[in-house]
Amino acid sequence: MGKKGLLKENSKVMGCRRCGVCCTQHQAFVTPEDLERIITYLGITESDWDRLYDDPRWQFTGYRLIKHVSGGCAFLKYEKGLAVCEIHAVKPACCAKWKPDPERPECREGMRRKPE
Image (tube, rainbow, N blue to C red; front, side):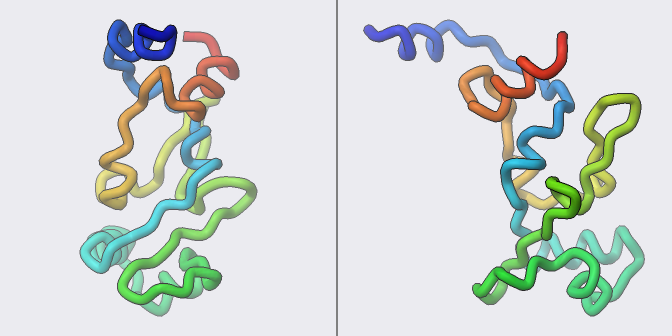
């Protein structure tokens, strides 16, 4: 068995370190259900969403792509050096499904950036 297989087999569950790397390297997409939940939570209209958060480069119908602002998700903020999602309570399904893992390049980068 190769080194990578051993690492995966022996790796432990990793909690989110709130480094924000995943939010800077990926753009979250929102489903129609996500969009309804988020705009209700924010108290805005779909037109407001289009103007403030929608990445106009996305060419597919049904799903939306959250634009990046200042190098990261429009909802990514930092408080006391920790990444904070402004819509964490209603975050898109793709974000909710993201699981930190020491084998993910994003998580390895985050571990290099800040101590435990």
